[in-house]
Amino acid sequence: MNVYFCIFFLQLQTVMFTATMPSAVERLARTYLRRPAVVYIGSAGKPVERTEQIVYMVGENEKRNKLMEILRRGIEPPIIIFVNQKKGADVLAKGLEKFGVSFSFH
Image (cartoon, rainbow, N blue to C red; front, side, top):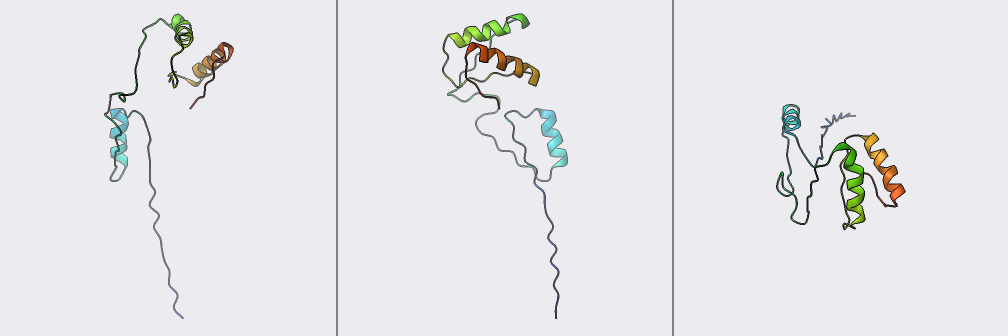
């Protein structure tokens, strides 16, 4: 009777998804990953042609009022709002609920 042993070496795969890749993170990935592959969709650092980017420079105390002013104007969805911390997102969510705006967080 012959007994055969099969040993399978499992190769783990690391996958990173990001909209932005800071150069420090890219260097770190290239240091630790074997044969890393990078896939770009669109041009790095440029918005998609169908996307309009608008930046408003406002003081810390003016942010909420400016956001509500923009939402009252009736900008077409989808709208992306960036916040620094989860706490800021929670505060924003409460304000948007009071204003009657439907939203989702990702």
